[in-house]
Length: 323
Ligand code: F6P
View 1 (cartoon, rainbow, N blue to C red):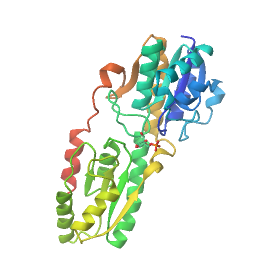
View 2: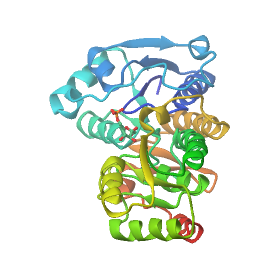
View 3: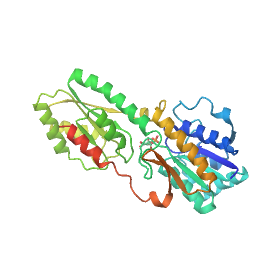
């Protein structure tokens, strides 16, 4: 393996830059040539490539976003699109790939490997923390801290006006950000996609608080839940309870930006180095992960057909503390 292409794909996540930096620096340390691929699979199909050196990744460790830019490519989901991407990689003599992204990015590399034999390692980068085979994904810690900071601020105004706030956090189909920002932010209820939520039970809980002269409450809602968006849930609750003046805040893409926490920087740095070393040692069709503080590798087939469940204990603790 002499020339490695590195790219970011899917939704950006704080810490992606730290991972790019680690791949470039570790690559150079091991005498590899590193090529940056811009705009994920879109740029791969178009040949938007650039040679990278130590200076290319100077001063990016602490920055949010991704210096290589990111995209969600429809064309790459077709065999024709992947053939175009492979032809570009060959043209530029790239003989291995390191892609930083979520499950869609991992699946894309898996198909490229099956169809064209391109060796690769995936680095899990997504704020959702929804990828099996790793305790944490890059960006999740920063996004959750951002959500907690926002929740604390909303609590100030909720208290001042005796209001009930429904705060919607990101996570697509995953409740990780919701459950942990909810515990850290002292939410009265946390609504996640992994669990059925009864509006009647929620109303009963809020009413109980109202009767006990609880003047304000925060409910955290993960986007993508079966019970609907924060807006829809707030509307249903409003129709059934008159205790609270109700407001909704959607945190949205705010959670995707910002300087990565120390945790995400270190995680990204470890994973970047491990990805280069793994690829160099002949590992492929695999994802680097972290389990109990140890770096591990998992093959695509082993992990991608199983869901990543929310920790049962997190749910239990959230319930005990929200009485
Ligand atoms: O996967 C990361 C994520 O931020 C999800 O939490 C969210 O559902 C989605 O991306 C939003 O995607 P986009 O930025 O394309 O709107």
